Image (cartoon, rainbow, N blue to C red; front, side, top):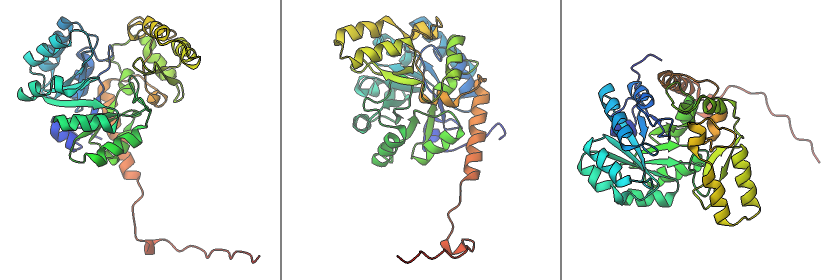
Length: 339
């Protein structure tokens, strides 16, 4: 499909982008300007991950993205991060067009940013959390299912069920589906569930512009669909590559080890160890189950084009609904034997 393609949905109308393709805000991978810029300029929504960024670095990234595109972009802000009030002051001063907040209640930021004209999306993983966010007045939702890397829902309910349930309950709310999407077929599936866009995280981890360590990207390519596991129940559960860290955590959880001992092990390893240091054996290598669908490191713009091409091919290949009388003649069924 040629450049300049558009797929219009409630989410693209809300955000002002051409394509219902959202690059997830991923600590270290999109804590920069390069990846968000590439995705936004390709027609999707690029997202700067503010989570691990120092204020000067975040300010620089926002300035570079704003200068490098006339397309929409977003900043993802985990509300639990240290110094969150200072980060919000910076985002307000820079008048970021779209804020995607996670891991905290929307009351903390919503009115302030909506009064500035910022579109406010909130990340949720259950119907209950979705209802609270909608009642608070958010502009849209990012609905995360169990397949997602990072922080999946505590009940590990699949994206298929979670997104459909939220879409049925809140049909007027724009929804971005997240968890398990890596290709154009996934995009088609997300839209068929009632979402207006799909969020792609692991797929963009393995992009040229992603700033995680090369060993991290290679770990994504090497992983199969069953090579991740969830660990850290009660500590902020995460989906990670099944490596030494995950094995140690799983053993502690399976044997009923004291919570504080598990916390010590959980915090001894970090995402930074893997994403910056390249420790894919002992670090927290966050990735989704869709890693098994990723087989090449590509420029982000090429990924966006492939998603659109694959989406178009999927739509063209779906069977039509036709009246039963139009079915081709079939041979008569063989009579059942008498008993």
